[in-house]
Length: 172
Image 1 (cartoon, rainbow, N blue to C red):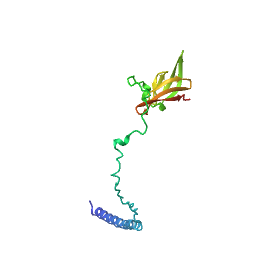
Image 2: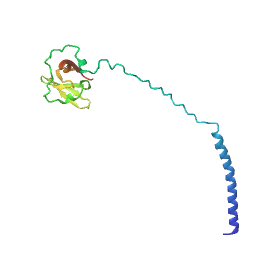
Image 3: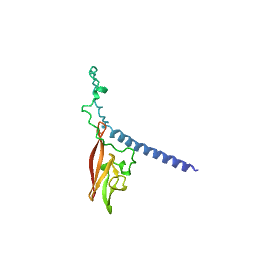
Image 4: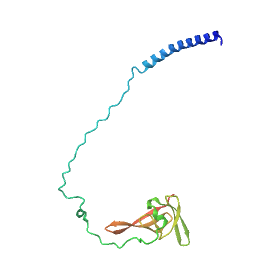
């Protein structure tokens, strides 16, 4: 390499260093001045209420969980004689609550009428008088073109069962 090339390279480097130093001063002043007036704002912590102690003074009163306090307020009603048949095989529609079933139509052949019932899992079932549905031992009593009449056995307290009439109207 020649001496001229070396001297030109050194001279260019010095000029670039001088220019770079001048530009950096402006940048440093800008950064110092931008955030000079701004201070971060931190919300104060919420005030914590002191815990209020409570002294239990009813230790000499009657224990509300004592079995003797659970005596029945009403005399036991005679057994109604109604009870569901626990030994019979459950039918597919008995796994769903009665209010989740919808009647979508009827089918007839001769004297027999079937109700077409849609379950919540979008399966469609065919049921006739005497079939069971719902979770309260509901038994179909009557099927009309617009309604399905069901007799349910629900617990009535004191180990008794009570009949309740329900119906499902056709969905249009």
